[in-house]
Amino acid sequence: MTIDRENARARGRWRATAALAAATAIVACAASEPEDPGPPGAWWVGHAPSVRTLLAQLDTLEGTPLARAAQQLAFVLPDCDMVGARAERADFAQLVVETRCIDAGDPLGVEHRRGGAEIAFALPDASGRRLRGELRSGPDALVLEVAWPRPDPSGPLALLVPGDEPAGPDRLSGRGRLVHARVRPLEGIDVSALIPAEGQASQLFALRGDLFAGAVLDGTWESAVYLPERPGAIPGFALALGFRIRSAAVAAADRLLAELQETWGVRRTELRLAAGGGACLPDLNVLPDFAPCYVATDSALVFAWNPASLHRALATGADPDAGAPGRIDIDLALIERTDRHVTEALGISDPPARWPWRRLRVDAGVEDDVLHGRLTLALERRAGL
Image (cartoon, rainbow, N blue to C red; front, side, top):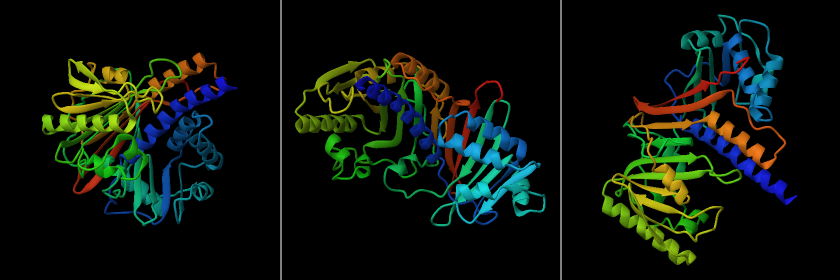
């Protein structure tokens, strides 16, 4: 029974990684309401063949809410060239029940022609502002362009809202990287302001006061999740914070480790890598495989879950492209392949999630004070897709 529970936990870590990464990618597309909101309420419209193709792809995600939703919509889809639905609010069940044929003179038909996308939709939030999206497909990818009401520029969500300057080249290695994000937030970064003073994170990491004040950092952050080193282990994790003044950043990192030493009564070991110097706390075993380390390179403080994660993050293979102000990349094919290996190694009977795409990439930026997101799903070459 204990082995079964451990296997379930190990499997859960993988599925949580994929789900969290996908959710993060969607959130990173946050944007302001476009000038022409189109028909009122919540709605969607599209060419029926394109809708059926998309539903077939979603149906391969067996056992997930997306697959169940795709099956429900496919069941009621009428036999006509253009289909769609409208509801007063973003109620999926109502948008399924109201699905009907759409003619050229229908407001949804007009909206569909205006955008020129294969599938278009709009979903209002509680304040009345609406997420809008347009989906287009090609031989190798699905591309979803979205505009969302901008999140409140405070709290952790603000870290996902890109500004109007490129985030710069990657600092973390791309080898064995399952999930990657790099953003230059619109409101900059003030780590201490993002952590509630009385919260668990503040107690664990001692992030308080001016430890990482905005003046120390250059306004960019980057994170990466790496393949686990063995079946059942948690994935590797690293975070890079770009800095303006190296000496001030190193002093802040050393102070962080000193506070952790005092709080938890653990020892510190010095660390010297080709990329720079740093330190680890090898005895801080408050979480699985947790032995936090940091290294100060010539441009960033790189924190990692443990020494192995740090070595992997600082290996060669980072993307030199400066890119957009915000971007997220998720290697779905690598996640699925690793999930399959974990399943086999741990003797888990249920099959791993089967993604219809091999990669998800989000690029986001600001234009005319509106944040735009572009989500690209690279198609996996499989029969029937």
